[in-house]
Image 1 (tube, rainbow, N blue to C red):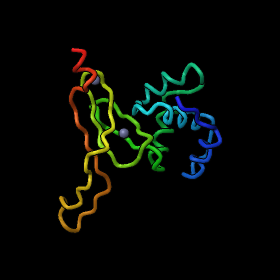
Image 2 (cartoon, helix red, strand yellow):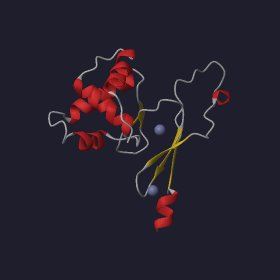
Image 3 (tube, helix red, strand yellow):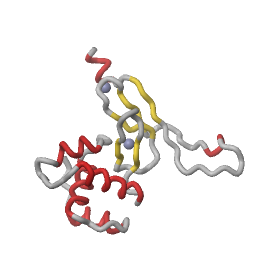
Length: 140
Ligand SMILES: [Zn+2]
Ligand SMILES: [Zn+2]
């Protein structure tokens, strides 16, 4: 696990115009050290022992703020779950239907500008692929 310095975290938030509160710094740190596209529940489980005052609502609101400011991407790859990605560079995702893990795919061309009619403007491209990952296939 990489060691993220508080000062760096503080600067990342400030650059995005976000007031660096204690909870926000902790949530950002978690996202940077756990690049697994966590859900609110996963972050809550990961931090609640260390920060008993942290509620799921706070996590949810913080992530919404981060998304608004372009600090995280919101993934709606699962039907009932929202996941958050600290990496906002365009990339595709593969969700394993067996272990639930969400993998990053970088070698997928997401340039679809030629596919929309003239005069249209694309604001966001998302590609979600579902299947079974190599680890799970080996284990079955
Ligand atoms: Zn799997
Ligand atoms: Zn990702």
